[in-house]
Image (tube, rainbow, N blue to C red; front, side, top):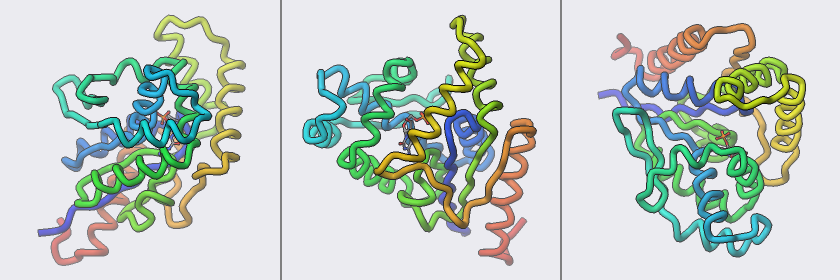
Length: 232
Ligand code: DC
């Protein structure tokens, strides 16, 4: 039997990683691991326990004491923090902001990377994040770097927020995306960088289906080149 692959999807926010990694995992019958949700859960736990996001020592202690799990439910994948379904509450703007600070803590990253390796090591997984192909699984079987222009990512975010009834401005939303890009790329600990051997897909002018098909072609190509005799 062919071994199952480890697939890494990295890229900036708003490039379509979450949507595509879920679809790709479903198509392949793989488990989808949203590593951003893991960092968000730690940020929520820190907020609830009143831990200052710059207190590295307290954060490092906290991260070893919480339990983060993924559960596949009929309504989609759920994230559990110490057994509680936190899938909704980790997406608030307040937690998003806190997450970008908490995820810069080296102790938090070490613990999350260990957990991500444990979850993914047997293969049959699609991991989505910022440092999967560079730090977590530098020897992943397939690596994608999904990008899109800041204007397009800002526009998508704007539509998403407007659909939720939030009165945001397009120009401001694009400026926010640009500011977050700059912070993510400039941070000292695990900045967003593209793995040299990643296939870069620019989704600016592509539909979700077009990106998914490009990804599936690459996965098939990798499977065929490693096991030519069993390729379908
Ligand atoms: O992908 P997302 O928006 O859910 O990520 C939330 C935050 O976590 C964002 O600030 C980037 C950070 N993150 C990270 O530092 N490393 C990862 N592997 C995934 C997310």
